[in-house]
Length: 187
Ligand code: SIN
Image (cartoon, rainbow, N blue to C red):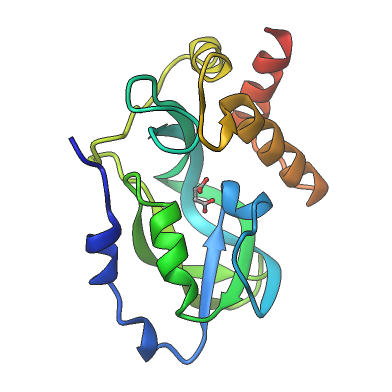
């Protein structure tokens, strides 16, 4: 069974049509910036909640024992904080490969402060109907799962620790991520 979204992402937007391309990162893209960018800024998106509900078969888990990483679930009242990167279209070959396990590129309104005007940008979302989606589990169970998962990019728990640290460094809170982090520390 393949979860690979590389081919599908290639045909989703015509990247060369954009005058400038902003990419919004809300998970590992916040703290593992392994691609060139022109500019970087704190940013927000509205109507989405970050949750550790996506299975990771290629980075923080394996096909037999997938780990758990962040995706976004529609949630009307929520604001999700992250980082926006101004990039060129060339970086998407690398990013589509990196995010290939169920993530599709979507257009999104990116806000650079909570009051300001939005700019159109791109974001990777692993939707609830993708084959690697794991969905809700009670916090303790979810943390236990993460505690015992690892993959080619390292321990699954380090994904959560690095994400939580990066959010704290930006003075942001995320109740879900911080709760799972606390459970992991108690294990
Ligand atoms: C993102 O960081 O924006 C996507 C999810 C991830 O790679 O962790």
